[in-house]
Length: 198
Image (cartoon, rainbow, N blue to C red; front, side, top):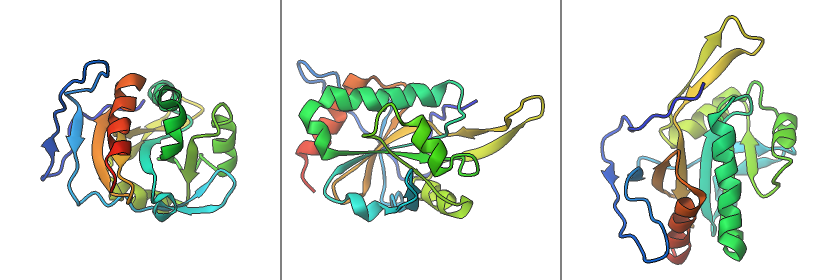
């Protein structure tokens, strides 16, 4: 079962507070400004097997989430929030690169990702070999580890940090947003990033 980590175990992070606009709910808690130690680098493959790197999305605001397709509860909800956020943004969603990176590359093959994300082809689902996925996690300072499930046909689950990352148009991670945010709140944060040209 995915664990919601509420704190990054790294120095140099400051909490970011936003003033609430009249009609837009901006979360004032659970939004963390990230240091330059978060590089956002990755070199993975998409659900068609095509090589994809972070540089491919320069010019767009990136919304990045780490999860896995066998997650029983939390990841499906957060993926639903990603999809609903794109709907919330309307035409402005074209300015966003919504990216899902698997923390379970052994099971999350391109085919598995293709099936899982058939409901919304706007979400860019990425995987890779174990080393490439570990490097991507490290670029976001994201905790993840296998946990055996001896009495389950799944054999193991993956505990991991639960965050939405918002990267600026140059690909630099700017904010980490703890899971549980609403599509309206996440959309409001993304709108601010869309307006802030890099």
